[in-house]
Amino acid sequence: MQAELANKTLSYQKRYYAPASTGNFSVGFDLLGAAFEPLNGELFGDVLDIVAPSRTLELDIVGRYRHQLPADNSTNLVLQCFAAFEQKLGRVLPKLALRLHKNLPVGSGLGSSACSIVVACYAFNDYFGKPLSDTELLTLMAEAEGGVSGSVHYDNVAPSFLGGLQLMLPQSERICRSLPWFEHWRVVLSYPGTVLSTKAARAVLPKELSLAHSINFAGMLSRFVSALYAADEADAVAALQDLVAEPARTPLISELPTLRLALVEMGVLHLGISGAGPTLFALCANDAQAQLAATYLSRHYEKNQDATTQICRLSLAGARAL
Ligand SMILES: Nc1ncnc2c1ncn2[C@@H]1O[C@H](COP(=O)(O)OP(=O)(O)O)[C@@H](O)[C@H]1O
Ligand SMILES: N[C@@H](CCOP(=O)(O)O)C(=O)O
Image (cartoon, rainbow, N blue to C red; front, side, top):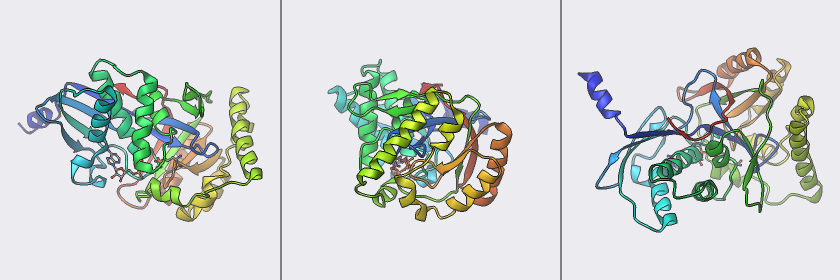
């Protein structure tokens, strides 16, 4: 009887998913981002159910991180996206009963707000017969994300929507382009369980960069991208240096230097801040190394029961119907 009730509660017409993402990927502040999925097949990203047509727009929220969202669902990004989608189309749409599975922690550096935005916009576009092109949809997603973080940046919405490692292309009609990746690379995402709002982590950033600093930043990102195209793994790893955000944000994540020393001694390729933090990402050369890094980070970085550490591969598919 109870199972029957639970099934009824979880019934739906259509179900959609968008993966977690790591903005910046150390070397590309606001310009580079990657989508990830756990090797164990877990859905580490938000799921949106279109439960049924409804007289009014309704949202129910379930999932591990539901408690990190405001109790009042009316302010939720999913509902804001419905309004923005209607406005973009310039017509009133039939209303829906929706259910969000909040599987990503909020203010975590895992692109949590972007993930809800992407899954919602993707779902509405698919459900209503794809009236928007991918480019229009991506622009809508970035505008919604800009409303949360205080400035429009595509490095979470683009990979969560399109999958892969995405490089943003300023002033290009393409918006972004997928980059090559080393298939054997694994990424361990370790979230300590504490919240760091993206807005707050952007407030500590330098307002200006000197000419020398700008050249070094552009140079290091170019070195990383060219190393990927040349399949030069050692040079790609050597280029993973964050010259913009990390120096300003390390005081907010004081464990980073010590953890990095320990992991690099274990052979891990790189440890960086995922998005605005506090999640850290460890780039690993293979499964065994990723397992070691995950065990170490679980033991030394997780702080409470909201914490989670996931061994991931690149998510090539991005947002999709399940
Ligand atoms: N569905 C949602 N998912 C995530 N955040 C949401 C959602 N709806 C509203 N919010 C609000 O948006 C803000 C997201 O904060 P932010 O620091 O940008 O998170 P993240 O870095 O994880 O994307 C929070 O104030 C949160 O309460
Ligand atoms: N480029 C942004 C990325 C923010 O990612 P989030 O997952 O922390 O929202 C930044 O570094 O501010």
